[in-house]
Image (tube, rainbow, N blue to C red; front, side):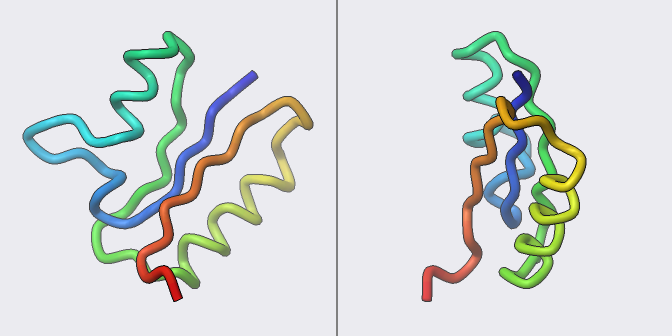
Length: 69
């Protein structure tokens, strides 16, 4: 099982760990983080779909949308 995370700047980590880094610490499972500062929902969606095409059925996807609506 792998964990993939997607989001904007709040997913990338700054001088302090953000939620993807905390998930990795808590679960001891490697997290593949595709967060990018300034990413919009279109980028986040496209990145998640491209990754899903290569992922297994047991992998976990966590998405933090840039704008909820």
